[in-house]
Amino acid sequence: MDPSLLDLAYAVSVLLGVLAMETTTLLGVRATGILGDLTIYRQAMEFQQAGGSIYDYVYIHPRVHGLGFTYPPFAAIVLRPMTWAPEPVVGAVWLALTAKVTSRFSHSLFFGTIAS
Image 1 (cartoon, rainbow, N blue to C red):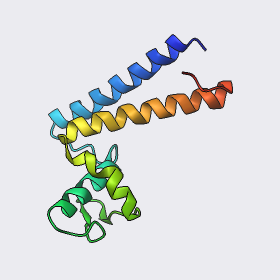
Image 2 (image 1 turned 120 degrees about the horizontal axis):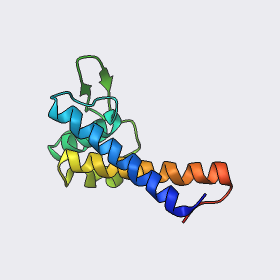
Image 3 (image 1 turned 90 degrees about the vertical axis):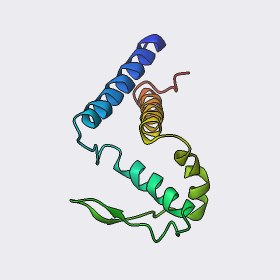
Image 4 (image 1 turned 60 degrees about the vertical axis):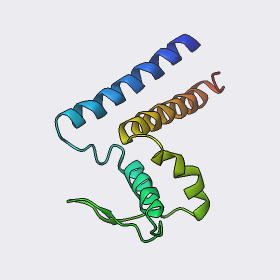
């Protein structure tokens, strides 16, 4: 596959994802489930910054209860930067990185090489 087509597909997927996130936000609908895990990671980090333990944090949502931070303590170091930017920015970056990794993995799976 032509690398420029792969880059175009990547850009379109990120754009559609960001549009979906922004549309649901503008309509007042929280996009829980789309980036639900990201919300848990981010809120657990904020809970820790406020003096709590990341393992005492519990995600509260009308339909989902009892989810919390389940990763080893080292993950908190890696995830801490998520609290440095507004949630929509973190969500867009998270979505872009996920799309990039997925597109590269898919290319490798279907074509046997990792596109640059």
